[in-house]
Image (cartoon, rainbow, N blue to C red; front, side, top):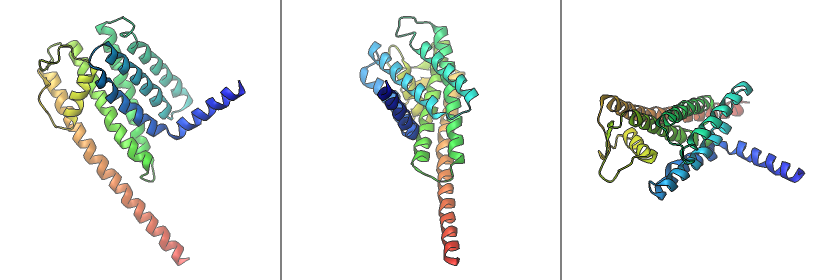
Length: 238
């Protein structure tokens, strides 16, 4: 029993130390793995599993006060129950919409925390670079959730190519990132004003984020270099 507790404590310490790289790995697995299992039940199951891991790791990364930790844990448990309803055989448009609303709200909170972490960081280290990438990837998941929500409400919200008979979350992930990067292949296109508006908001936010984060990181690196030179000059004078 003591050995199990020690192993558990070591695992928690390792996760805490490597929380940002593990979060990036969890996000990448959520984005990549389901694509290699087609668009059937197996793909849906893999996606639910990886998304559950992403929820848990996101709650680990979110270093908040104890009062808010209970709220975060409650949201994670609620979302995991909702996303596991469909693989369990319960499929409803209403539960899907509630699930997507939870996903959007939760990841907006996580992205807000990650942005605050970057802004407060005094140096540009590996964790800051990893977090900058992860914010973009999580923004893509938020965009995909919003697109899928519109599709659930308006079945004719998008034009799909002939090979997509039953759109799943992976298709909206693809569309979200293609739109954010302004590549725009044109295989999936918005049909109604609401989704067209969402499309250009995604493209604007994607381009602005890349421009702002690069400028921000370069600015921090220059300030970091100036600070090192100033410290070196002070040591030399002394």
